[in-house]
Length: 373
Ligand SMILES: O=C(O)CCC(=O)C1=CC=C[C@@H](O)[C@@H]1C(=O)O
Ligand SMILES: [Mg+2]
Image 1 (cartoon, rainbow, N blue to C red):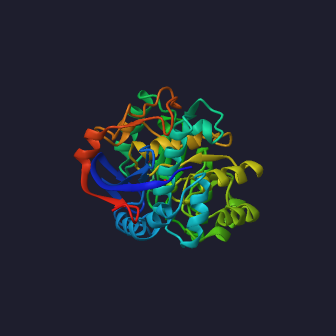
Image 2: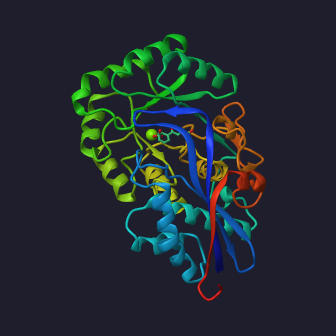
């Protein structure tokens, strides 16, 4: 049993090594909230909020998450003892939306729980892979620089590459990449930048033998994605469209996706992510773990999740040094020959690099259980 006594919230900020551009935004620096939960025995668990500073990817932001955590979610967690982390998503059902805020604290409790059980988190959740399949995302719309990045990433041992496309930067871009790398395991993410009016163009992308096309249409286009999938051979992967279990059930029933990108933050926590994995496994829909330009704590949760059986496609789980000069965990995450070894240490399996965490912190606050102040 875990009785959470207090929670440390730290807002951190770090520049990316180089800007990351997609159809909607160019990210140059990253803010996140790091959570440390401490129980009655002094055991600590860590979580990370993956919302961005502004609401370009989903509605949540660092500030909305901070408010939700401090004023709504943490009081629910501190309210009474916890037997198992899955109780947290049940308690949070009373709060609408805000999945990234929920995931931040829920994951911290998973880390704490696994540490108390003295088990690596991936083993505790039933992971079967000792190493997870890794991939990397090229975040530029400049063709020459994209080719350079692909070359560099391949030298670093990645063997699955995702590129960003948008109207006017699609067919020729993919053709150029295919001319240089005819056999590369390649996929494209459109971040909702097309509509069904672009059907001829989207169908023409079939010839590039992409692993999948991610989120071509709008977030609420579940019906339209089904219509598109009927016309395209390339599997459609949904990202932004799938937040709840019910969203995934609808998309499966309609035939809107051949693949699902599971992001722990987007779906409200690790327990929900596992349930989505189980649903997709039952329906033979392959899944992979999405990335959020995150720090090491979130990367560690992604690694644990991706050890589950249904994660048969390399995820956007790259090395710490893909984005950071220095990550906030030690050891850092390293990709070798397209794989990341699952850690053997209890909990998330990585230590917090306290020095680096403090150096990146711009604001922090301790929230204490009522009566303990
Ligand atoms: O974290 C990574 O390695 C890449 C993440 C990534 O590709 C994305 C993160 C967030 C929004 C998008 O730009 C994109 C995605 O939609 O998957
Ligand atoms: Mg995406």
